[in-house]
Length: 359
Image (tube, rainbow, N blue to C red):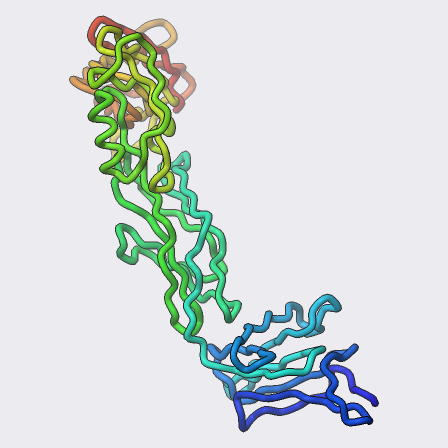
């Protein structure tokens, strides 16, 4: 008995199913070969999928052969590559070391849902979504659709597994998901959803629990900071905290102070920058608060000279983006140093923060 290597072809232009058999010199069937043979299906569509079966009932999609040389790896028994013809048509080349049924059928199977969807808000306030590639029986994902509250929002190529959504706003309640489409137009299911966690600081434990449930999350570990407990306990800290965007159903851990204790005011300032917006100079910064506050801000130089003052009536607990518009008469010199004195006031508590202004 003798067999030829992969240069040997068996054409299957007239039929979409082929039973590859080979007999030995004594008439017995040969099922395995040391070197692969090549089977060619002519005039196939771009969405047709090559498959193989040992019994004609259960079919397995073939894995595409990577590389321009189209060589079947030694650790694989079969595979295929797709040839693009000059007339715009296609031809499928199957390389196999085992002899059985092969077919090329129209793809009607949808891709899987992308998994591993994650989200974060970058330093520029953009929402960045990333996910793992979906799987499809054809081996080809044509595109991914990003859905917002179940409605298509934007589409990216199938080779891309991330997207940046600009101008993400705090307290965004929308749910973000991703689905995949293959080249045949089959649409896969939506991935699980991600959304921004709600701000819970300053709420009673009872109200915070209700808000967590309403937004599709679960209550995680509750840490009591004072001896009193129950519905009068007030949330002073949460993990994760806004603007974190996480998977629906994720737990949110809380730290609470009871009605007989006092929630502690804590302030974190994330820097101050002078920017120009719509022709006006302003100072922008982000602050994270554990309690609602009254805020007064002063702009000073190194010698203590005061240039401007702002009073904000009420700043809520949680993460806030603050803007201080400079009066038209105030001109900051490029090589001078300026800073903000920030006075935070909550009932019975007062904190001061000094923040240098970058400009």
